Length: 532
Image (tube, rainbow, N blue to C red):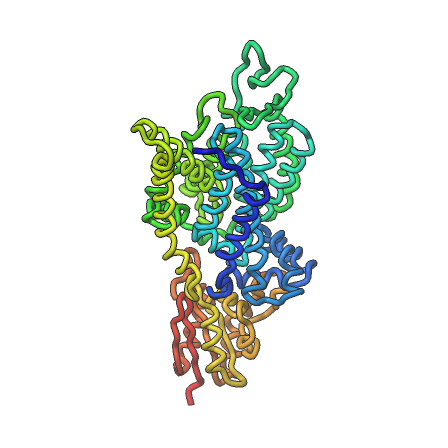
């Protein structure tokens, strides 16, 4: 394959612009859902109230709420405004993935490293899961960006051994954990990469195979082995990041009960992860093939390969999901969005696989005696065909991810029903109380309803939903209203369900006359009136 080079800025800018178009298209199409409603509740309150909230609830998302707070102050709570930071973060992640891919391809001995980087960024853009989290007001796009940044800084720090790079790495890992505490598993993956990249002492070099003076390797095809002391510096950087994350980890562990809805993984859990990371079921065998070729590309995982693309990407891709899945058999903690930050690693491997396939096909073409344009076409055809297969496979899911009903909840439609049928004096009851987030995503019609179950507001109680009144008080209040709306989940989360008090409230409401009922995705909305 001819070694083509692209301007450095183009390698990064093209994926950024591609993600801006792909991720930005119909960004407000899908309805806000319950998690984004929680974002509104958490981030729309004053900064001091956000800190108070984190001491009681949702500490793990506290840094994200603080980041989004000025965004809401400036632009409001429309879906576009809320999701814009995630889109910007995913654009930056795509561009930085391309930059990282180019650097790793160069030190891995791959031809056309700029092409590898460009393809890595574009492959990340093509995955519907990337679009999903670019269009969601939650911290997972920011986690992905910080994970790519930390990986890039690791490579630079290990090559130079200079403390400023390691300080940057520590800061990036702290930010990664601040937006997703489970993402600190990336640091362990980086440690594994450093161990794999080491080489035993040689007669002419130090313990890693580097020159005794610690001079970093030079030249575009040089092996990038960590300079002596890299593991110690990595460990110090991880300790610094851990200290910075200490308060967040402390409060998050105290609130671990918030994960009581997570269930034990099943084989379908792994199948769903494979499908979503590949982009579509039909794309799985292609991505597996490309990923396998990426592991073999250039210096691959061979002994003495240094921090090659495969050595950096494989632990990053595999270790965090495997650890969370394994831990979930003892205490369920695995949720797919918690490992989205591993997706850039798969894009790097698949991009290397595409380029390496061109090399292998070129060798086969020359072995058959092909020359000139025929050899060029024969070299590029397999990679081009597989790339087209991937694009064709993800086209449908990319359309579906933008549908109005693409999220578990369609809270926009719920709000529309209330707006169309409410009357002055109507009340609302949330059964169970955690359904109160339904009224926070599109709050205008819900604000006109008397929330007769509310004892303390979210801000006053330093909680996401506020605190409910005792069942007896609610039942007494029901007697004073003529019409009441109820909000229920159609499928309560595991660990949820009605408490005895909520069951008593439900019986009291059931004694009223049913006026109408609407089932909208995950929500059952009912309207009752007093019997005459």
